[in-house]
Length: 264
Image (cartoon, rainbow, N blue to C red; front, side, top):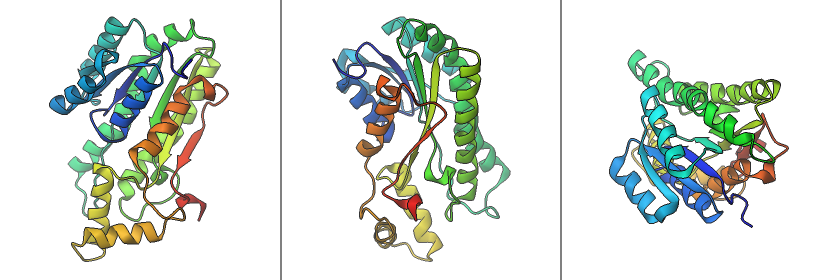
């Protein structure tokens, strides 16, 4: 028996990076997965590599209609929905003084509204599946270490991820109070080797007054107690755990995978 045998998951932002690796590991663990993303070609490639166990669905997380269609596609193809991973996110990389209102609103639309809509519109299917499962259904929200401590590189990103952190706790308590049997937990990655991680390095280099990305990377690694940046696989393993019945007694919690960053 695999930890996710018979489970059906919908993952936003799953065409690449942490989301794509999570989809791959979930399929390996016995699940079927709906890969939601705005990157159509990349999303179809990711789903195609996983065979019949995966389905690509176009998903702009800021649009209610896209979420409704994604849930319908997942349930129509695989019969139910046990797991939601709110993975899609945006990094701005601008100081408070430099960011425009439009940029802030876009950041909120993806990082906050996307998580709210995903949770709200997947809820009926998750609640229904939970009634047939010994340990119910699960939601995993991608936050960040920047949602736990201050960010020197992007305070606005930190503000949105702090919102995800507390929304996770509050949603967990609401669903427990209502008897929905849906666990809600958050994942808090540290510096990870993804496209977004590269954006962070670009911002760090700029703030150091240089274009030397490798120098910024070395500086990050020097400050990591574990001595390296994280990989998508490091984070995806934690997401799979939170989504699985192995985490059946966890709700409203945050799992930190950051190489020791927040221990300092």
